[in-house]
Length: 439
Image (spheres, one colour):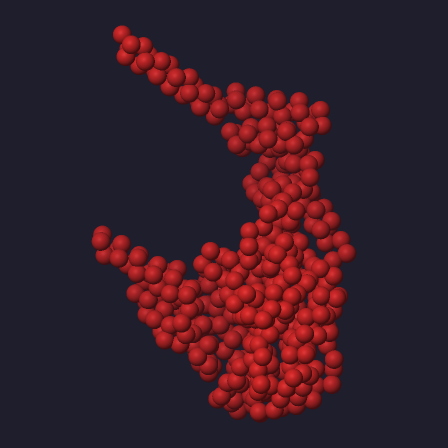
């Protein structure tokens, strides 16, 4: 008898729960949430109204009234990251006309508000495709290590420190702290020997420094490494102005400006000087950080980063990136235009073809990506260039599900340089191939 009562109770509970679940996904329930939301909306309780209208639209997304008032209530509350993201996505969706139009108008106004005073910028060119990379403001100051090296003039390090102070002064929010250990630094400045055998019939590539960003498999920004060459390609020391200009430029990259400006008046312009230049050591012009550089960096640090060094406590205070940058494809297309100009200007530099191949790969245009890697291979001279070519080949092969081919390219890449990301890709390939063999 007792067991029967328990079974009846369980059946009753299941029926009630099933009824509740069914009711929650019926037009009656949707209308209930809508009516409740409308009362809250009319009373000016917009935050609570958002929740009600959202539940109504989740049940019936095709109802014009539900979506309209959901958007209308979102436009009445504080434009947090969550609200920005919702409205931006609705503005680009197949939502009912009035809701989409209202969202689009509000997003446009938000964009103008976010850009006020910062309109003159190159933010679309500054970001690395869809990724927003910068240091967590909550962890400032940024720790910088400057390598001691007896084989370089003293003014090399002095100019780097001057560049650090200039970014602090001009930005008004960036702060650095010099540390003695490379292991505890966010940004490391090191000095290395100039590569041999880089010259050709055009002359020698005149490169002062490069910046490399190290990101973990979990999208954590671990370190930025700025590597200065000790001498120019002809064995001469770089002049102080060259070190200073370059330090300003490379620090811009280390702060998160992963692309380049399109104006020669900005320190982040990609081609302030010809890459082949016999008289580069006698450059008379003194470059400095421009207002466009500052506007771009300021705007960058207002955008929520997809890659940073530590967990951000208050996401809601940030801008949702696509509102001021556009969607992923628009960013990629802008980068594509920039790189095509670079290749037209310097058709025998491998790096241009490597970079443009990576853009085509992200656009899913694998044939174009491969053609550009072939060109890159034709002009490659250094182990680093060959490493990047093989790594890019591996990624394209992997995405095309050509796993044997991908593994071959990964192994070639590792023969040029050990890299944890490449090792991780090799592990993924092996796991997939193992699963394929099982079936």
